[in-house]
Length: 322
Length: 192
Image 1 (cartoon, chains in turn orange, cyan):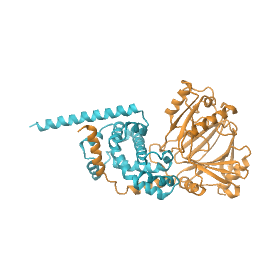
Image 2: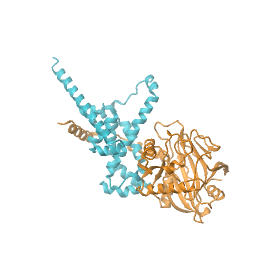
Image 3: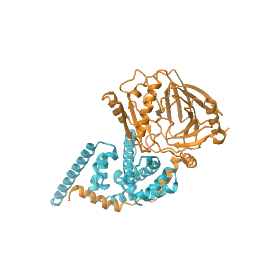
Image 4: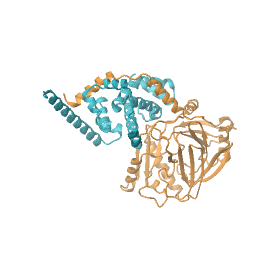
């Protein structure tokens, strides 16, 4: 008998003999329960601080760029550091072209699919001098839109410990949808894909390079709920659950201001060079909610120029205990 | 459960419906556990990775296309999780190499070992478990899950040429080992 046939036959026989150990269902149940309540993951990353650059501009490497100033908030587990530099280049025409490219790629993705994208226009936003060894790409996805408010809230409650939601009545907010994504962009982890995309544009002269990516494990889970305020402006509430010691670093041209929200430290940021946003602007307010097993980074933001700091603060305050 | 019968449950599962979770788990866990046991050759690890697979299922489901067989897609996901698990163990192993040398050998339960031995009681499967993990996973997916080489490349996210060469290399090693075992047995028979 050929070795291939012997293998197939041996596996068939062995499969019939395999029995699932007693108690495995309970073990799987406990594993899922612990994770949903924000428990620590098992695995090799425990105990090591993760350095994660925030989604949007400069998601891979920021070392070597001098920040003019930065603001920082954090608890013992999560630290958020927003650095400000004027070395990020921005022009509205190219930003609109980049948004068209991201939309073009998104239109070619099925619901639930994700991709990384790179182009000469994206390249033009990177600060100079840009080291050739530093690779960069943007993340785009066509996420599942959860449009049932009750189901979405239940889903958030199962993933976000100590879930805080805005008071829709008090703020006159109307729920639009929810997604398992950041408000804009996403974390780029697939370095090999990024290198391939960079080579296609830089060396082979392609105008737009993109590649679908598959992620089984959401290493940095984020959930964004989209609302409309009474004037029809979009309001995005993003939650990131962080169970391990992590440091988030953001580099942008935004104006940053530290303030106190019902006794908690928060950062208000206005970025008028935000190339994901159709208005080129994104104003946001971020704070950290410390829960026993995880920290949750909350961000309330909007791309509408008419949404000001007072409105974001007012929404955030309805989410916080007095 | 037939493949098309999964689809309504999967839609509910994405939305966090616990009954849908239970049904999909019950209908697929045996299949996934067997695959993990053949890949990892360790009942404890197979149980741990089984938990990881179902933990990640709701978030991975949006990537599932309904024109694909669901069980096959789920098995692909399990194979990738097993591969991640092995990588993490390897890293951990390097970090704790020194400590391991100083620590006493971990003692596995004799009854667990006997059970695993009984379940995998085949000369050829014993030899498969001597293969490096990268070769073994190709053998398991090809000859247990009966995936095509193209499907294995897609599942593991590696080039088709690499799958072909790993498969070829695995079979060559098995043939060589089987040949040596045969010679050894012949020698023993004629030793007197």
